Image (cartoon, rainbow, N blue to C red; front, side, top):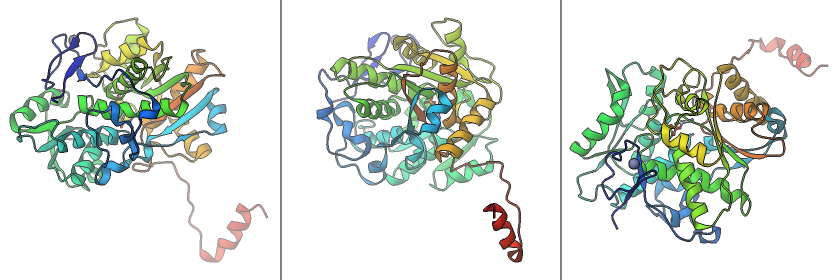
Length: 402
Ligand SMILES: *Cc1c(COP(=O)(O)O)cnc(C)c1O
Ligand SMILES: [Zn+2]
Protein backbone atom coordinates (compact mmCIF):
# COMPACT_ATOMS: atom_id res chain seq x y z
CA UNK A 1 0.00 0.00 0.00
CA UNK A 2 1.43 3.41 -0.91
CA UNK A 3 2.15 5.76 1.96
CA UNK A 4 -0.50 8.39 2.49
CA UNK A 5 0.14 11.84 3.89
CA UNK A 6 -1.97 14.01 6.17
CA UNK A 7 -1.87 17.63 7.30
CA UNK A 8 -2.69 17.82 11.02
CA UNK A 9 -4.81 20.86 10.25
CA UNK A 10 -6.39 20.18 6.83
CA UNK A 11 -6.66 16.38 6.73
CA UNK A 12 -5.68 13.85 4.03
CA UNK A 13 -3.31 15.07 1.32
CA UNK A 14 -2.74 12.02 -0.88
CA UNK A 15 0.40 10.09 -1.62
CA UNK A 16 2.83 12.89 -2.47
CA UNK A 17 4.78 13.75 0.64
CA UNK A 18 7.61 15.56 -1.07
CA UNK A 19 6.44 19.00 -0.07
CA UNK A 20 4.15 20.74 2.35
CA UNK A 21 0.42 21.16 2.61
CA UNK A 22 -1.14 24.08 0.72
CA UNK A 23 -1.57 25.77 4.09
CA UNK A 24 2.20 25.77 4.48
CA UNK A 25 2.35 23.28 7.31
CA UNK A 26 4.47 20.10 7.22
CA UNK A 27 2.81 16.80 6.37
CA UNK A 28 3.00 13.60 8.33
CA UNK A 29 2.08 10.02 7.48
CA UNK A 30 -1.33 8.49 7.83
CA UNK A 31 -0.77 5.56 10.20
CA UNK A 32 -4.10 5.66 11.95
CA UNK A 33 -5.37 2.46 13.48
CA UNK A 34 -8.82 2.09 14.98
CA UNK A 35 -7.66 -0.23 17.67
CA UNK A 36 -4.38 -0.63 19.43
CA UNK A 37 -3.68 -1.82 22.90
CA UNK A 38 -0.44 -2.57 24.71
CA UNK A 39 -1.06 -6.28 24.16
CA UNK A 40 -0.72 -5.64 20.44
CA UNK A 41 2.98 -4.86 20.72
CA UNK A 42 5.09 -7.49 19.01
CA UNK A 43 8.07 -9.50 20.16
CA UNK A 44 10.79 -7.46 18.45
CA UNK A 45 13.78 -5.47 19.72
CA UNK A 46 13.74 -1.74 20.51
CA UNK A 47 11.23 0.46 18.76
CA UNK A 48 10.07 -2.32 16.42
CA UNK A 49 7.77 -3.65 19.14
CA UNK A 50 5.31 -0.93 18.08
CA UNK A 51 4.91 -2.46 14.64
CA UNK A 52 1.12 -1.95 14.47
CA UNK A 53 1.64 1.82 14.75
CA UNK A 54 4.59 2.11 12.36
CA UNK A 55 4.53 2.60 8.57
CA UNK A 56 7.60 0.39 8.04
CA UNK A 57 7.26 -2.72 10.14
CA UNK A 58 10.49 -4.68 10.55
CA UNK A 59 9.82 -7.59 12.86
CA UNK A 60 13.37 -8.83 12.23
CA UNK A 61 15.31 -5.58 12.05
CA UNK A 62 18.71 -6.04 10.45
CA UNK A 63 22.01 -4.84 11.85
CA UNK A 64 22.04 -1.54 13.71
CA UNK A 65 18.25 -1.11 13.38
CA UNK A 66 17.82 -3.71 16.11
CA UNK A 67 19.62 -1.36 18.51
CA UNK A 68 17.38 1.68 17.99
CA UNK A 69 14.87 2.57 20.70
CA UNK A 70 14.10 0.74 23.89
CA UNK A 71 15.93 3.25 26.08
CA UNK A 72 15.67 3.06 29.88
CA UNK A 73 13.61 5.28 32.14
CA UNK A 74 15.59 6.18 35.20
CA UNK A 75 14.50 7.32 38.67
CA UNK A 76 16.91 9.13 40.97
CA UNK A 77 16.04 10.87 44.25
CA UNK A 78 18.55 13.62 43.59
CA UNK A 79 16.76 14.60 40.38
CA UNK A 80 13.40 14.67 42.18
CA UNK A 81 14.84 17.10 44.73
CA UNK A 82 16.53 19.19 42.05
CA UNK A 83 13.31 19.59 40.09
CA UNK A 84 10.74 19.44 42.88
CA UNK A 85 8.53 16.72 41.32
CA UNK A 86 8.84 13.02 40.44
CA UNK A 87 11.25 12.85 37.54
CA UNK A 88 11.37 9.89 35.14
CA UNK A 89 14.46 10.44 33.03
CA UNK A 90 14.37 8.98 29.53
CA UNK A 91 17.94 8.14 28.56
CA UNK A 92 18.15 8.80 24.83
CA UNK A 93 21.92 8.98 25.18
CA UNK A 94 21.83 5.18 25.13
CA UNK A 95 20.92 5.03 21.47
CA UNK A 96 23.63 3.68 19.11
CA UNK A 97 24.91 7.15 18.18
CA UNK A 98 23.86 8.80 21.40
CA UNK A 99 20.64 10.66 20.60
CA UNK A 100 16.96 10.08 19.82
CA UNK A 101 17.74 10.91 16.17
CA UNK A 102 18.53 7.19 15.80
CA UNK A 103 14.81 6.41 16.07
CA UNK A 104 14.07 8.43 12.94
CA UNK A 105 17.15 7.30 11.05
CA UNK A 106 16.40 3.62 11.70
CA UNK A 107 12.83 3.99 10.54
CA UNK A 108 13.77 5.95 7.42
CA UNK A 109 16.32 3.38 6.32
CA UNK A 110 13.90 0.54 7.07
CA UNK A 111 11.24 2.23 4.93
CA UNK A 112 13.71 2.58 2.05
CA UNK A 113 14.74 -1.04 2.48
CA UNK A 114 11.10 -2.15 2.38
CA UNK A 115 10.56 -0.14 -0.80
CA UNK A 116 7.94 2.05 0.88
CA UNK A 117 9.65 5.14 -0.43
CA UNK A 118 11.62 5.42 -3.62
CA UNK A 119 9.80 2.33 -4.89
CA UNK A 120 10.46 3.47 -8.44
CA UNK A 121 13.98 2.24 -7.93
CA UNK A 122 15.42 5.69 -8.42
CA UNK A 123 15.95 6.64 -4.83
CA UNK A 124 18.94 4.77 -3.57
CA UNK A 125 20.76 7.30 -1.44
CA UNK A 126 19.83 9.02 1.79
CA UNK A 127 20.80 12.55 2.75
CA UNK A 128 20.41 15.00 5.58
CA UNK A 129 21.04 18.63 6.45
CA UNK A 130 22.75 18.71 9.82
CA UNK A 131 26.04 19.40 11.52
CA UNK A 132 25.25 17.54 14.69
CA UNK A 133 23.48 14.46 15.97
CA UNK A 134 21.24 13.95 12.96
CA UNK A 135 24.25 13.91 10.64
CA UNK A 136 26.02 11.33 12.77
CA UNK A 137 22.92 9.21 13.15
CA UNK A 138 21.93 9.23 9.48
CA UNK A 139 25.48 8.40 8.41
CA UNK A 140 25.73 5.50 10.87
CA UNK A 141 22.44 3.91 9.83
CA UNK A 142 23.22 4.43 6.14
CA UNK A 143 26.48 2.58 6.69
CA UNK A 144 24.65 -0.29 8.38
CA UNK A 145 22.09 -0.50 5.56
CA UNK A 146 24.74 -0.14 2.81
CA UNK A 147 23.16 3.00 1.42
CA UNK A 148 25.15 5.92 0.03
CA UNK A 149 24.74 8.92 2.31
CA UNK A 150 25.31 12.62 1.75
CA UNK A 151 25.47 15.08 4.63
CA UNK A 152 25.23 18.83 4.04
CA UNK A 153 27.01 20.76 6.76
CA UNK A 154 27.76 24.47 7.11
CA UNK A 155 31.11 25.70 5.84
CA UNK A 156 32.27 26.78 9.30
CA UNK A 157 31.63 23.46 11.05
CA UNK A 158 34.15 22.84 13.86
CA UNK A 159 36.73 20.19 12.79
CA UNK A 160 36.02 17.93 15.77
CA UNK A 161 32.34 17.72 14.73
CA UNK A 162 33.43 16.82 11.20
CA UNK A 163 35.55 14.03 12.65
CA UNK A 164 32.64 12.55 14.60
CA UNK A 165 30.37 12.50 11.52
CA UNK A 166 33.19 11.40 9.22
CA UNK A 167 33.91 8.17 11.07
CA UNK A 168 30.90 6.57 9.29
CA UNK A 169 32.29 7.68 5.92
CA UNK A 170 29.36 9.55 4.35
CA UNK A 171 29.94 12.08 1.60
CA UNK A 172 30.15 15.36 3.49
CA UNK A 173 29.67 18.65 1.66
CA UNK A 174 30.48 21.92 3.41
CA UNK A 175 27.96 24.33 1.93
CA UNK A 176 28.70 28.03 1.72
CA UNK A 177 25.79 30.46 1.73
CA UNK A 178 22.54 30.62 3.65
CA UNK A 179 22.41 27.35 5.60
CA UNK A 180 18.79 28.06 6.57
CA UNK A 181 17.72 27.75 2.91
CA UNK A 182 19.22 24.29 2.59
CA UNK A 183 16.27 22.61 4.26
CA UNK A 184 13.95 23.43 1.32
CA UNK A 185 16.62 23.28 -1.36
CA UNK A 186 17.77 19.81 -0.34
CA UNK A 187 14.24 18.45 -0.70
CA UNK A 188 13.96 19.86 -4.22
CA UNK A 189 17.36 18.55 -5.26
CA UNK A 190 16.64 15.22 -3.61
CA UNK A 191 13.59 14.67 -5.83
CA UNK A 192 15.67 15.55 -8.86
CA UNK A 193 18.62 13.28 -8.05
CA UNK A 194 16.97 10.36 -6.27
CA UNK A 195 18.32 11.21 -2.84
CA UNK A 196 15.87 10.80 0.03
CA UNK A 197 16.59 13.77 2.31
CA UNK A 198 15.47 12.85 5.78
CA UNK A 199 15.69 16.21 7.52
CA UNK A 200 14.67 17.17 11.04
CA UNK A 201 10.90 16.93 10.64
CA UNK A 202 10.56 14.69 7.59
CA UNK A 203 7.53 12.39 7.78
CA UNK A 204 9.64 9.25 8.17
CA UNK A 205 11.74 10.79 10.92
CA UNK A 206 8.58 11.88 12.74
CA UNK A 207 7.31 8.27 12.62
CA UNK A 208 10.48 6.96 14.19
CA UNK A 209 10.49 9.66 16.83
CA UNK A 210 6.92 8.81 17.73
CA UNK A 211 8.34 5.84 19.56
CA UNK A 212 9.83 7.98 22.34
CA UNK A 213 6.26 8.69 23.47
CA UNK A 214 5.08 5.13 22.83
CA UNK A 215 7.79 3.83 25.17
CA UNK A 216 6.99 6.46 27.78
CA UNK A 217 3.28 5.73 27.73
CA UNK A 218 3.78 1.99 27.81
CA UNK A 219 6.02 2.37 30.86
CA UNK A 220 3.19 4.17 32.67
CA UNK A 221 0.30 2.04 31.35
CA UNK A 222 -2.51 1.77 32.29
CA UNK A 223 -1.84 5.23 33.72
CA UNK A 224 -0.02 8.05 31.89
CA UNK A 225 2.68 10.51 32.98
CA UNK A 226 1.27 13.91 33.99
CA UNK A 227 3.69 15.63 31.67
CA UNK A 228 6.40 15.02 29.08
CA UNK A 229 9.24 17.56 28.95
CA UNK A 230 11.23 17.85 25.74
CA UNK A 231 13.89 20.22 24.44
CA UNK A 232 12.74 21.54 21.08
CA UNK A 233 14.47 22.91 18.01
CA UNK A 234 12.89 22.10 14.62
CA UNK A 235 9.80 20.67 16.31
CA UNK A 236 10.27 17.27 14.67
CA UNK A 237 10.56 15.29 17.88
CA UNK A 238 7.67 17.21 19.46
CA UNK A 239 5.56 16.44 16.38
CA UNK A 240 6.33 12.74 16.69
CA UNK A 241 5.47 12.72 20.38
CA UNK A 242 2.18 14.54 19.76
CA UNK A 243 1.30 12.20 16.90
CA UNK A 244 1.91 9.18 19.12
CA UNK A 245 -0.29 10.61 21.87
CA UNK A 246 -3.10 11.33 19.40
CA UNK A 247 -2.90 7.84 17.95
CA UNK A 248 -2.87 6.19 21.37
CA UNK A 249 -5.86 8.22 22.46
CA UNK A 250 -7.65 7.56 19.17
CA UNK A 251 -7.11 3.84 19.60
CA UNK A 252 -8.19 3.91 23.23
CA UNK A 253 -4.81 2.84 24.66
CA UNK A 254 -4.63 5.95 26.86
CA UNK A 255 -7.53 8.01 28.11
CA UNK A 256 -5.75 11.19 29.13
CA UNK A 257 -3.16 13.14 27.14
CA UNK A 258 -0.03 13.94 29.13
CA UNK A 259 0.77 17.67 28.95
CA UNK A 260 3.56 18.35 26.49
CA UNK A 261 6.11 20.86 27.79
CA UNK A 262 8.60 22.19 25.27
CA UNK A 263 11.78 23.89 26.38
CA UNK A 264 14.09 26.13 24.39
CA UNK A 265 17.30 28.02 25.10
CA UNK A 266 16.46 31.64 25.94
CA UNK A 267 18.85 33.05 23.32
CA UNK A 268 16.90 31.33 20.53
CA UNK A 269 13.31 30.64 21.55
CA UNK A 270 10.80 31.27 18.74
CA UNK A 271 8.30 28.66 19.99
CA UNK A 272 8.43 29.79 23.62
CA UNK A 273 8.01 33.39 22.51
CA UNK A 274 4.99 32.56 20.36
CA UNK A 275 3.44 30.65 23.26
CA UNK A 276 4.02 33.53 25.67
CA UNK A 277 2.50 35.96 23.17
CA UNK A 278 -0.60 33.77 22.77
CA UNK A 279 0.12 33.48 19.04
CA UNK A 280 -1.32 30.77 16.77
CA UNK A 281 1.79 30.48 14.62
CA UNK A 282 5.52 30.60 15.22
CA UNK A 283 7.53 33.31 13.47
CA UNK A 284 11.26 33.35 12.84
CA UNK A 285 13.37 35.21 15.40
CA UNK A 286 16.82 36.80 15.21
CA UNK A 287 18.41 34.07 17.31
CA UNK A 288 21.51 34.51 19.47
CA UNK A 289 24.23 32.19 20.71
CA UNK A 290 23.56 29.50 23.30
CA UNK A 291 25.64 26.65 24.68
CA UNK A 292 22.78 24.35 23.61
CA UNK A 293 23.83 24.57 19.94
CA UNK A 294 21.81 21.45 18.97
CA UNK A 295 18.57 23.31 19.57
CA UNK A 296 19.37 26.77 18.24
CA UNK A 297 16.87 26.95 15.37
CA UNK A 298 15.61 30.50 14.81
CA UNK A 299 13.07 29.44 12.16
CA UNK A 300 11.78 25.98 13.11
CA UNK A 301 10.08 24.16 10.18
CA UNK A 302 7.65 22.39 12.53
CA UNK A 303 7.41 25.24 15.03
CA UNK A 304 3.73 25.99 14.50
CA UNK A 305 2.87 22.29 14.67
CA UNK A 306 4.83 22.00 17.94
CA UNK A 307 2.95 25.00 19.31
CA UNK A 308 -0.32 23.33 18.40
CA UNK A 309 0.83 20.19 20.22
CA UNK A 310 1.44 22.23 23.35
CA UNK A 311 -2.00 23.82 23.23
CA UNK A 312 -3.79 20.56 22.39
CA UNK A 313 -2.27 18.78 25.38
CA UNK A 314 -2.60 21.65 27.85
CA UNK A 315 1.16 22.04 28.14
CA UNK A 316 3.48 25.02 27.84
CA UNK A 317 6.52 26.22 25.90
CA UNK A 318 9.18 27.98 27.93
CA UNK A 319 12.79 29.11 27.69
CA UNK A 320 15.70 28.60 30.08
CA UNK A 321 19.02 30.44 30.11
CA UNK A 322 22.48 28.98 29.68
CA UNK A 323 23.22 29.06 33.42
CA UNK A 324 20.17 26.92 34.13
CA UNK A 325 21.21 24.51 31.36
CA UNK A 326 24.74 24.26 32.75
CA UNK A 327 23.42 23.64 36.23
CA UNK A 328 21.06 20.87 35.04
CA UNK A 329 23.87 19.28 33.02
CA UNK A 330 26.12 19.30 36.08
CA UNK A 331 23.36 17.93 38.30
CA UNK A 332 22.76 15.02 35.93
CA UNK A 333 26.45 14.12 35.81
CA UNK A 334 27.43 14.66 39.42
CA UNK A 335 24.26 13.42 41.15
CA UNK A 336 22.81 10.84 38.74
CA UNK A 337 25.98 9.83 36.86
CA UNK A 338 24.31 10.65 33.55
CA UNK A 339 26.32 12.46 30.88
CA UNK A 340 24.21 14.60 28.60
CA UNK A 341 25.11 17.21 26.02
CA UNK A 342 23.90 20.73 26.70
CA UNK A 343 20.69 20.28 24.68
CA UNK A 344 20.03 17.06 26.58
CA UNK A 345 20.05 18.98 29.87
CA UNK A 346 17.50 21.53 28.67
CA UNK A 347 14.47 19.39 29.56
CA UNK A 348 15.62 18.95 33.17
CA UNK A 349 16.31 22.68 33.47
CA UNK A 350 12.85 23.29 32.00
CA UNK A 351 11.12 20.89 34.39
CA UNK A 352 12.71 22.72 37.33
CA UNK A 353 11.54 26.05 35.92
CA UNK A 354 8.00 24.75 35.37
CA UNK A 355 7.81 23.65 39.00
CA UNK A 356 9.10 27.06 40.13
CA UNK A 357 6.39 28.65 37.94
CA UNK A 358 3.72 26.44 39.51
CA UNK A 359 2.86 24.80 36.18
CA UNK A 360 4.08 21.38 37.31
CA UNK A 361 3.23 20.50 40.90
CA UNK A 362 5.27 18.46 43.37
CA UNK A 363 3.00 15.42 43.13
CA UNK A 364 3.29 15.27 39.35
CA UNK A 365 5.08 12.43 37.55
CA UNK A 366 7.00 13.99 34.71
CA UNK A 367 8.88 12.23 31.97
CA UNK A 368 11.97 14.28 31.23
CA UNK A 369 13.67 13.40 27.97
CA UNK A 370 17.46 13.62 28.08
CA UNK A 371 17.77 13.71 24.31
CA UNK A 372 21.50 13.23 23.79
CA UNK A 373 24.64 11.97 25.47
CA UNK A 374 27.48 14.19 26.56
CA UNK A 375 30.04 11.48 25.97
CA UNK A 376 30.67 12.62 22.40
CA UNK A 377 31.48 16.15 23.51
CA UNK A 378 32.30 16.06 27.24
CA UNK A 379 33.91 19.34 28.17
CA UNK A 380 33.71 19.60 31.94
CA UNK A 381 36.02 22.10 33.54
CA UNK A 382 38.38 19.55 35.02
CA UNK A 383 41.07 20.03 37.60
CA UNK A 384 43.59 17.18 37.43
CA UNK A 385 46.85 18.11 39.11
CA UNK A 386 50.00 16.21 38.09
CA UNK A 387 51.68 14.27 40.84
CA UNK A 388 55.01 12.42 40.97
CA UNK A 389 54.75 8.73 41.70
CA UNK A 390 56.91 9.30 44.78
CA UNK A 391 54.40 11.85 46.11
CA UNK A 392 51.31 9.73 45.35
CA UNK A 393 51.23 8.26 48.85
CA UNK A 394 50.81 11.67 50.40
CA UNK A 395 48.16 12.80 47.91
CA UNK A 396 46.03 9.71 48.39
CA UNK A 397 46.32 10.05 52.15
CA UNK A 398 45.03 13.61 51.72
CA UNK A 399 42.24 12.37 49.44
CA UNK A 400 41.23 9.71 51.96
CA UNK A 401 41.38 12.23 54.79
CA UNK A 402 43.93 10.23 56.80
C1 LIG B 1 17.86 17.30 17.39
C2 LIG B 1 17.98 17.45 18.86
C3 LIG B 1 17.01 18.13 19.62
C4 LIG B 1 15.85 18.87 18.98
O1 LIG B 1 14.94 18.06 18.31
P1 LIG B 1 13.96 18.65 17.17
O2 LIG B 1 13.28 17.46 16.62
O3 LIG B 1 14.81 19.34 16.15
O4 LIG B 1 13.05 19.62 17.83
C5 LIG B 1 17.14 18.13 20.98
N1 LIG B 1 18.18 17.52 21.61
C6 LIG B 1 19.13 16.87 20.92
C7 LIG B 1 20.25 16.23 21.67
C8 LIG B 1 19.06 16.81 19.52
O5 LIG B 1 20.03 16.17 18.85
ZN1 LIG C 1 -2.71 21.97 5.85
